[in-house]
Image (tube, rainbow, N blue to C red):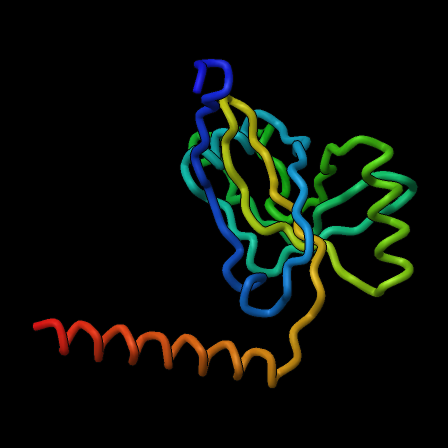
Length: 157
């Protein structure tokens, strides 16, 4: 792998609730429009994606409900922590997503926030909601796998 291919990835925040509540069908990498004090706050780890979602308004992709804590050493330039922020995708990708969302009743959820080099990127997932029985099945399968692993470990001792 050449040095051009090696990008410095550093995960800032993950939306684990999204993986629990939704089936992630596709994911996209989007840039995010931020101001300077927000980037400094993100470097400090003050981000919460738990209740965030995305919507498409007037051909632009927006993330709503994402909380970025105000920068500690900030000044008058600190912004509202819950403000709506624009995500940056190609127009063709946005129109494709818009059509898919309208036809199939899916949702766009931010899955993770990370640094790619010096830029902040958001992984946005095209998601379908899980029903209660889906969540129960998944939890039962995890518990069964855990029991199997435990039994194998005991047997190998």
